[in-house]
Length: 347
Image (cartoon, rainbow, N blue to C red; front, top):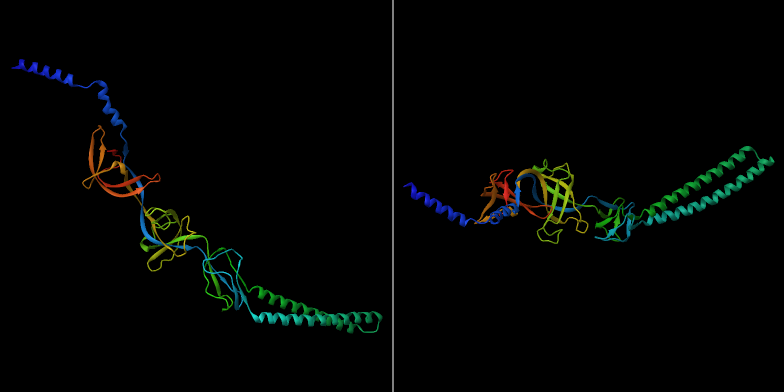
């Protein structure tokens, strides 16, 4: 029975040799496998983002105050106007100051006349004393009268300078450059010394973020902040601007912690405007793979894993959230199904 088997084996061998492809055709699959893109699963740091609302605020809001009491005679600014440091924004007048200045001027003229008379008496006494017609006491009396008249004149002039300075202080100036937020007075209003004429926001705008106090320990200076939505972007729903936390306020109010974030391009927006932001609170390790290596069929996500022997198998994974890289590519968190170091093959 062994003899009929050998011819059959020989016949099958000939058929296999005839069906075998040439050498070049056998190398084609190897070249194709070498050109396929691969990716090694690795663990990266991922920021957990907290979605909150923030308001556009000025770091410094300074009031322009009246230095004297009186009536607002002229008001040159209104809400929304931009002012420069030292610009006159209002004039406050006090009629009593003008009357006091008139009285001080009249007093100075009288004292000038008295001083001139005392000077004449002093010169006469000096001449008579030199000729021996009067005693030294008469000269001393004339000198004292002249010194007294001169001191009174100096005091009167100083008093008039004070009144003139008070009138000049009726000009309310802007303490810094910025935009006028509020003008609580009108022309003709009576104000007292120190009363606010205008509120000026210095143009160093920040985003004031309010977070629950449970994030107070995780929030750090330098933490990233993303502004989402269309508030600061032409693209609906996209990330408009990115910034960072520059200040964390130590006081917790009503169970919330407040922080300031610096973001480019806030100067053209209203103070107090609310925007949606994402604040990076914590950082964790996770496995990430490019979205192009994941395929989805019937609602199930698969990746192709290449083992050491070159064997490729599809593995079911649990997909996490997606993030955009700096190059604009989409990375996907893999929650389960693969391990760090696994080699993925693009499907």
